[in-house]
Image (cartoon, rainbow, N blue to C red; front, side):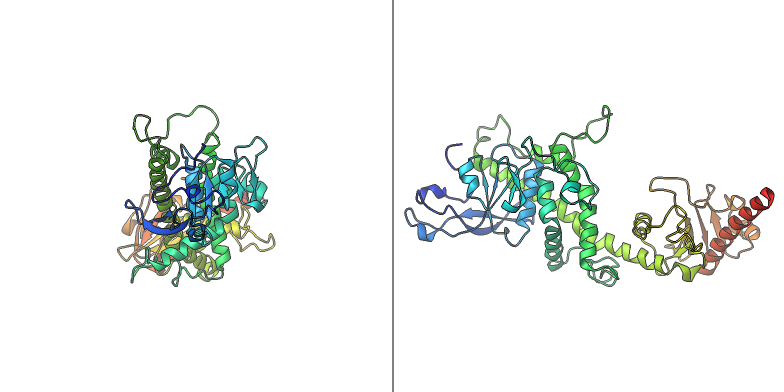
Length: 434
């Protein structure tokens, strides 16, 4: 490319002066297709008047066809205070790239200290685990992953603060909120812990796929059974101009599409973060509190109760147990036989009655750590109350994974009796062996 491409609303800086600073003044404007805002680049300089050129920062990336990684990398940078007003310069001209404050996905150099973030060079083989040994992910990074590795925590924090100001997900009487209310205040976890948890979750569920797809890494070994064409990377690709569009090769037209792609990717990334902060985090705090208080419910620690209402708990429980480094027997300390994994979760249902639900062995398992007793399964009402000797029983599912009682006291007794039945069975086995 021999001449600097003109961006929408941006005069070519080269026209100011051969020795000009090539910096551009920013005028924030709103993309018409989204609430996400991106500034267009402008210069107030008159021809030959170098002193009128404002010194805004410049983000460099390649021109031509864009991909999800460079789009997402630029979006993340625009969320940071130091780059929020920066111009995005799309070029492969090494001279112009050298003048940029930060360069992504082009240039053939990865040097974090010099703010150069390309991944196409033969020598590049970085993953999140090589950049940060405390992380487990080994997928080769794209420019998106490189920017996330460098600035991810700052980006997440910036987006959380941005959406707090416009009250995303915040309602007066909602249990959920901005992640900054009673349930989302963090409990014993400080903001650093929260951001680190979000960082890991977002890499695994959002960023890693972008890295893998851009680097041509298949999701699994062997031939795929079907093709996915609705993923984020594909949808970004569809926003590139068409070969049959007479204006499709004009950089200003491509740049408008690039902005649309940034808006789309940014909107989805923001949605993930506001969900984590306003919905997922409050649920984690509820589960954490119930887990900490489980020994008040039963001395074994195997019964957990949500006294004020339930929330999605399975993934949170497993994650919190892993953070507590409990082993398969639920023991942090082998000498403490009471520290067992939770077997039953108790919570009120929408009708005012109570449920007892078994904790599954794994996320997608239909097997439980401890199912309800076989003699209870498939029974209802009086028949169930009679065999359990517990008043108010409503049902136990035929598979034994869930049951119900009219009262909190009744459902607690069901959990206690289920544990007792297990203990009695274990004692009987030991007696037979003896």
